[in-house]
Image (cartoon, rainbow over all chains, first blue to last red; front, top):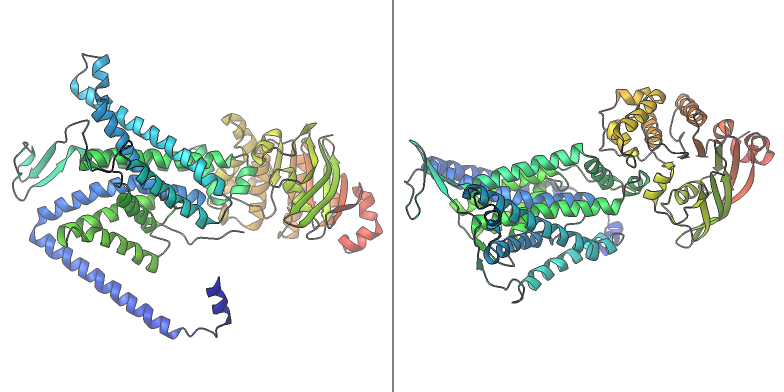
Length: 376
Length: 235
């Protein structure tokens, strides 16, 4: 408030210093991109198979981020709220599946009822049931959060809801860290099925025998990588269909654009908003389970960094845009994997947030974003 | 009596926007609310459709009290509000806008019938079916807003400034269509600054001045009232 007053009273701004600053910024960005191209080019030439493996691990991360980023971008699109508790919903999804698998051996339930079922089918049905229960719990959690914490603030200034979102996020993390809840420890995750890896070399695809190393120059991938990729793409297609083709999806876009007029159409705005939170939470939960299976260690703080990076991905793609979140997430995955592979592992987070800063400086609307039009 | 508004008081913060307004609409009528900017015409419509809550007074529709019914429920009762400034959903296509107008209805065949009826009134919309609402011209947007308002099969349409920003030829066209919609059995509450045009198609009219009704009567009587002539008709 005070800033605007000062600006109004100050003499007309001289544009020249700003122009030269913009030039410096552009030169910096060009230099940075040249450096990145050089780094990638030399490393690709040096060891193509290592490069390919890094790209694959980046894809795996990117596809997980995509499932989280969708929730950020959809909720932002409809209520203009960065739901910082979203990453913690992801964490809860992972924990629910952990308890189902580790404590209750729930992934084996089909075998109890249908003893003749082939083990492969048991695992598939069992794992899908684990995932569905985790998703349902996440949906219930997110809609409860929405009703208790965000809905009363719907007409409050946006910053109030944002601060509340951060509060909810901390609450979930530290409530989860209590000993009688999830405990603050890093917990080794019990997978509902075995992770199997394969490698590709000149002579075709071979499975990797446990305890042995694949030959150098081979490209390796695992079943969980394939699952994450396929599921993430299916989620993307499903959401495109939902938003473009269904009555609920069109209503979501109408509510996002103009709430009072949406009400005049007979659309129950609160219901549409809850539905949006629910969809986002379901896919965060799904992402949480797949992430835990892939990286096999869980903790109540595990949602923070993936959540923030998915948020960066959503901003990079253009917040509010569903394809944007997907593309942004894939770029984030690559940026992180390439940093880990060719610079250093601890740099990964620094690079992720450097991307956020650069996007906000250079193109705040993101790749697919349109300039925000503030309506009266 | 289709709509019965009694002693409505509406505030914007400390501003007393509607100061005890009462009026009614009979089945099949076109009723106009005329008055200057800020007289409370749009506020009246927004209160009827449930976007605003009155501090006191009541709104009855088909004999039922809808004063505190939420906006999204009021559409289902049969009141459709075509808001001021058209309020087209710009990122939605023409078809999607019309589908949102029929949000309260479920039978796809019936919805298609209503859409075809809209196309009879506004053939232009059919040509633009897959275009985004935001890319339409002002006149086309007004057609879309009106068409969207017809999609819920209302028994009463509240029309807020349908002539705003349109060329005289388009205004004529829109008003002819309003008459036609009315002749098929839909009652209409029309809010207009273009008082002459509004009175020419209305059965009755109310004149609003700073939140009060100062004059009411048959459209013809109002048109010939010397005060109205000098204040609103520019004659």
